[in-house]
Image (cartoon, rainbow, N blue to C red; front, top):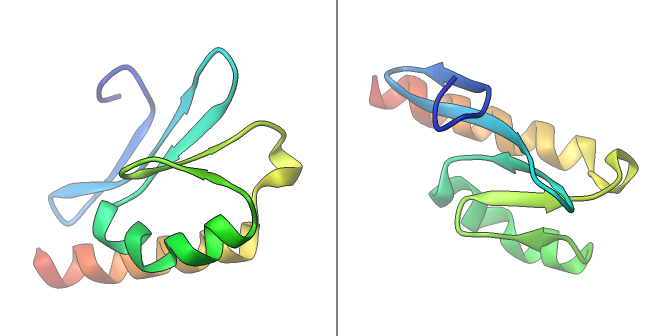
Length: 81
């Protein structure tokens, strides 16, 4: 737990975290990796914060794209460790 949400660490840094807000769920990633995919996420009409992806129903979440973001985050964390 970090900042009141389940957080997964990898290579000495945050890998990802999940938070439940009043009106949405948020999946937090490394901001620089998320920036690379921001245009794709915006095309899907998803709400992106500085380092998070906000979604309401789980069905709204593009799981294949999220998997790719997590893979790149893991690669970045492992090289920076």
